[in-house]
Image (cartoon, rainbow, N blue to C red; front, side):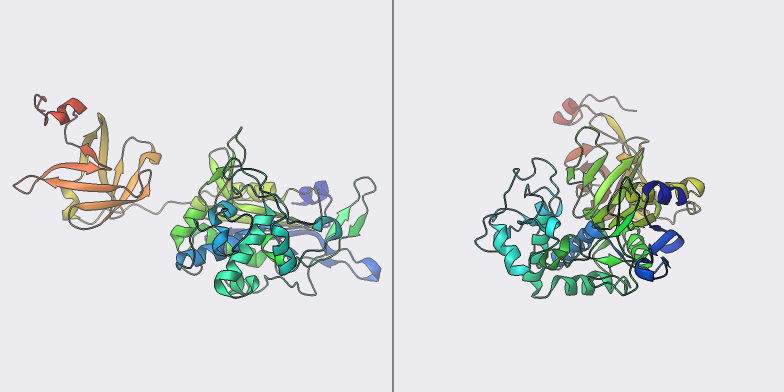
Length: 441
């Protein structure tokens, strides 16, 4: 970290690593305030607030998804449902969450030059002047405008201010007491570093007003560690765990050449080697932020730098997560014999479908299938009535496994996603003729 602070030329680098829901390590190199005007320099600690910029978008997305889970909106809903008569009436909630709407990047007006963001009425008045610069889903196109609009969707659905909804639905359930739009007096200050002279100039604060949902939150190492822990191992405090899974699956690729990046429903994904990290970066005048979580390993990292440009907090957060996992790999729980499952016994073992083997087995008390030794081919099932199972995880999630019985009650065959599954390898020609002429083994 000290090397990063010096290389980036940032007054401070603050970071934390969370593992299994606990802040396992934190570190701070440099100062949160340089001590201009005769003040003493102020060191950073785990409770120092930094402006997290576009990491705020993940909180906006969670608020939207919590409303979806309650049935108060659908991802397929268009803007017409919430802003009747808008020029962009056909743009859908899902498209805005995934930066797949094609809407122009920024709200109307040069807000990043004058650091003057519009209030609600002015923001909405500008929407009809904004362009849809690409057709929806043609390509990933990052849009702050889209997240400003999602904030308006949240407010129209709930009748409450965006910040109130985020606090009630996300921050309070996770105990994030030092996260919000209004920073405390002891916050970090943000700086621009002259690239040649190396001198520091404090950046001004400005209110994002109606555009706050795209980047206005302040937070701390402690609070963001709690957030990273939740993303790694979610429960029902904010949304259903399955909803977090849904948000962290790719909707659109961000780099079509390398396929190392993607964006889901509010969260970005980055691949390094065989590992896929989820999270988000943030940039505001005087502040850069990186959040990375490796969900399978339940390890995450947050990195803050109080500088406008030159730092790479997402890369450092990824480095920290990998350092932890490489040094102390997760220990798998000890294996224990399965408890007898009489209702599954006649389904287990070696089967065939489409000329290829398929294996049914029990793991942790649940029915699984595997096509090959590749873990990516595995599917987990849950019972859904007599002789009927639903795939709930894995490659064929959502499909049905149906048990077909002979007149004597024994299992004759299975249907999985409508494909016949038999104890012997059959050609499609055998299935057409009812298996006639098949060599018995």
